[in-house]
Amino acid sequence: MERIDPRQFNLRTLRYFLVLAEELHFGRAARRLNMSQPPLSQQIRQLEEALEVELFRRSHHSVELTIAGRAFLERVPLVFEQLDKAITHARMVARGQVGRLEIGIISSSLVGVIPAALESFGQHYPEVEWRLHELTPSAQIEALIERRIDVGIFRMPPEHDGLQREMIMREDVMIALPRQHLLAARDRLALAELSDQPFVMFGLQQSRFADYLYQCCLQAGFTPQIRQQVVEVQSLLSLVGANMGVALLPASMQGLAWANVMFRPIAPEPPQVPLYAISRQGDPSPTLHHFIAIIREKVSDSLSTPSRQDHGADDELRRI
Image 1: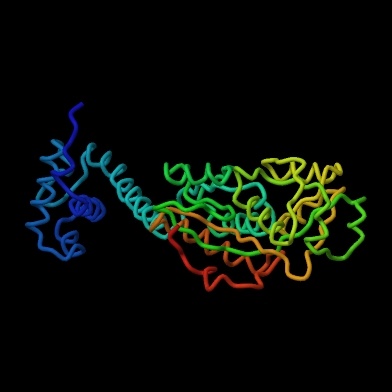
Image 2 (image 1 turned 135 degrees about the horizontal axis):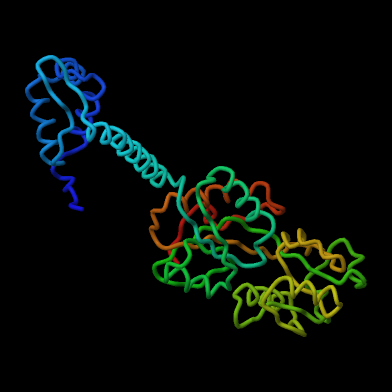
């Protein structure tokens, strides 16, 4: 079947056809279209020539649709319907109301602010398909560079050209203890009081967060006795609950509510740990911007409110 070159006619010509098909009178159709009758007749004739079919049967007294004209009339409105859908879709994409968002995340952030932000994001932007990828920080950096994810969420991102970060929250570090531990009876603890305790920590070679906590212990005057290093927060809490050692964790981890684990604040000034959203430098995605904005909105409802500002870094995009 020979294909018609759509460049031989345009949407205006199709509109001329629809109006004439409704009026079945060249004079009335021309008046509706704010044009004179001869140009309208010429446009309809050119359309018929392009289609190689007769759409209207003309006489001195009447204009009628041919069988081909009636068939054409059934389909032409679909062209405008699809165009309307395409325009609406394009506008929604431009506004970030439809699309996809690939989110890299660490397991320890899947409590508190981020789950609340995901729920709110889904309610505000139901046409956006989002998917979580639980990855280590280094794997998130690699996935961002390779464009497999749009945003990464983790603590203390390493330096890397072409990426930017925004601090979305800071929270206190707390001490996780076995429920039966003698120190668990205390309301708060100084970090130095853990000097003789075995520790369960995230892997020092894989986690900048773990290295930061290790340095906090050194600054408190002792070298932590690391009994076991793990990758996932669930593994860490499981070992703490099994009386394998104590751990240092962000305050939001209390939300995981492990039966055999108690959290105690650090006194007098607890270390604080940031949580960052990391994306590609200058990423124009409005969907991504909406997601980050909703995270900011939910920070005020988080378990811990920042008490020390990082020189305005909370609202500022930085180049890493």
